[in-house]
Image (cartoon, rainbow, N blue to C red; front, side):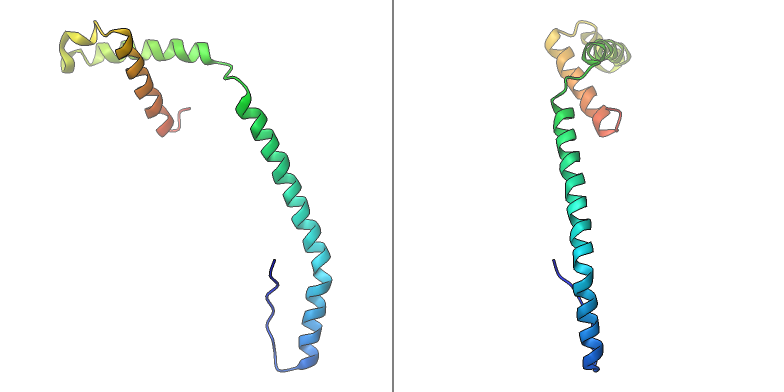
Length: 108
């Protein structure tokens, strides 16, 4: 931690500034320790949240399947009739692409 201070021409003024900086250090230390404690608590909370399962996973999967089917119907003109007969691998790929697009757009 640094403590910048302007040095002037007056030696007594410089000593006063140094003393003021020294007197402020305990309060600054306490503030830094409080901030550290808060950040550590936030980190632990975030770790716990990351390990929780996604509560709406089944609903999300169902909605993504429906979205994939609707997108396939909407894209029939572009892809021909292949969109209707899309196999499971194609639906998974399309679902993954939709999820990535939603994440980029901030929807998830």
